Length: 205
Image 1: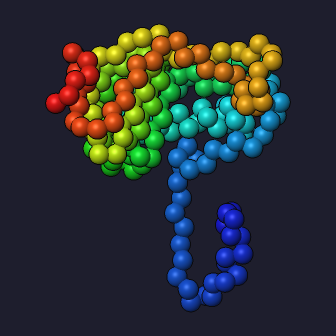
Image 2: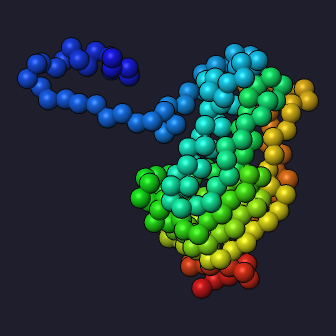
Image 3: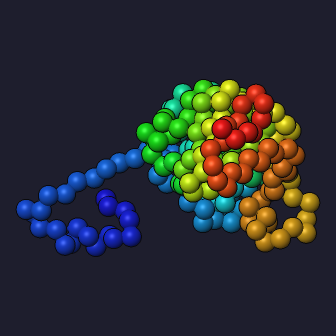
């Protein structure tokens, strides 16, 4: 059956109209966040339609894209937090301004290695990776017109970890079911010009 927001579309097609379907794997195309945390507690499942599973599956999707590009990525890790299965592995978020397609990821990422405690956020068309050994948190923000290339860079800090709710948190964290303890993060922000991050750190080309 056709399941989308246009279920009436088949009624507009005649037997002579040409049509077809493109099917994507679930990990790449479908991860709802529509259920409250209680719906996912005690199920032991990772795909529960909660905010926790939606966020975790988003990380898993980006991790698989990186692995497809040749990056060394750890196995997916989930653990129970107050009865809710939550993702607790490497957290990779590739902003659409950095890349969207598999070809773009492959073109911009080579020689990358990421550990399970790591978090990688990349924003900006001008970011490139030509060798990165990441064992911790890294946030890259590259403004339009600027560029930064990581070459044989090694970044290590305490990284990010799940943190149980203690009570009294706001609605956002309550719906999420946990918070993130950002113990250590290297922040690289480039507003203009060409930059490189290597064994000596960040420097202008």
